[in-house]
Length: 408
Image (cartoon, rainbow, N blue to C red; front, side, top):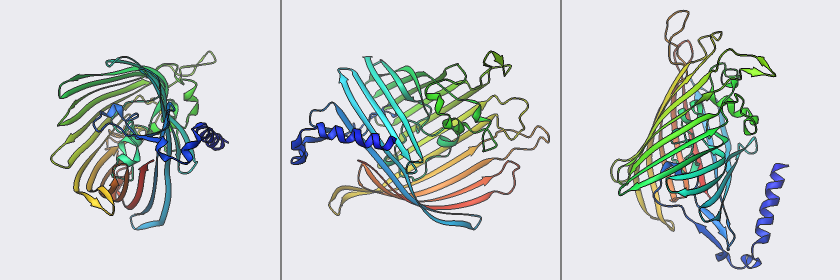
């Protein structure tokens, strides 16, 4: 039903466009993003197409891939995946007032998520008000997650399993920037709805922050009744790159329900992140993000529920070639490698004092071909070593991935 409504809306949009568009494709104007931007601009810095003089610009991206993996020599064979089909639209309502939305279909139509739908009002470059469904600016990847921007098929572990992937909530806040020659300073600060008890009551049997995404009621009600605070500061040097520090924290439990006390204290989740995007040498780039989370787990829970989690990923990319190929004027070949680590339970067992496992190391070399900047074909090999809670010898997994991704 939801898909039918979206198709109907799209049909109405193009019916309202001048009928001459059927004869003259020049009525559709592609609006390219800026070539230089900060991570905070990722939601707006995308290619859009505008029909004639209509105030609405539309765009989107698609991701598909095939995967073959084996763990300790055991494999379930090949699979093909339609990872994501995402639509976004933006509108400049009037001077200094604009709106953008992002709707994602994941794994076909298994999940349909409204990831961003916010109104921006600019009072001054340093003071912009934003309200609606906001993508919480924790780390770099959460906002800058579009598949065509990355040379890897899989998303980073720490940015999807410690920080919930594409984590967004309804709320309000402010953002802005200051330009000072070659330097740019920026900030974001929002109050939104937040987490719930599913982070410690889930089918994973561990502290698992992504479990809270299943709660669709967070778009109409804040479970704890206390807002989640997310803030980020970043600085960018035009030739060197960008450095960001961010924080997200708040109460996740509900103390009172129907006038009855169900918990004696407020229990918090606090997440700290640092990210960098650096230009190393000609054609080379380093993008890295580290995350540390602290969770107040009730005393009655066993040691398998982690109170502290840590993870990071580091991507290094080197351009190998850029020249005309088969009619593509600036076809680019890139080699890249990702190193990543997550520990879902920092600490020791209360009962024995032994170290708790529950950690994953992974390395992923990649070869990516971009016939144009907005389209990428990528081949990856991912090797991962996962140690269980008790610290037994790790399970070793090798995965071959080939994927395509493109804006449209």
